[in-house]
Image: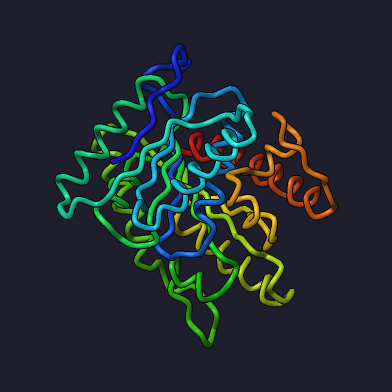
Length: 282
């Protein structure tokens, strides 16, 4: 378990009441870590103290993103807002995994306003435990019928939703677990990524199917991030779109940067509204 210590003098506005955002999907390559890192930096730049937890520590994309950010700041002698980061490797047993995560969550809850958890693209003890802490669950989904299979079973002839799949059942299970543990509820947000690759007809079908499933499963559906090279490029420096031309990070902005940043603002605003709406509904 790797960690950072909290910056001296920083404390949560409501100690012990951190809002927990879990970014989860049992399929890899859906953009979970990119979404998680942009959420983290958005919260940090909003003046919040943020804890980040990487439960996909074998692949460790979020952890490497944080490491790249630290290295960039040191190399260029600038100060970038940073989360208090932990990565947790699976222990091999459910009890140990849950205990390790519980200790991290109890620690971060003592001084963080928000905790963002990035989960692996597989059904593991750690992933289920992480999901059960969510106040808000964000599920990035590539905008394709193949990726939709993570959420729903679809009749190929009628193109109608037959029911939820393995991941929706897991979310149902952890929602019950959360309710039993502390009486809390989980606001679920599904966002569609990489929208540019589908035809207009396919987009319409995806919107209809996800809209049907949203009513059945109780999640809010919003549009996510487009397929842009800039997101992959920023990873190597540990930067996000929200860092450009701030804190000494000087970048010549082109139209792609501007469009991506506007796209991100729309996404963050939609997530904020979906969280509020989800908790009111609960």
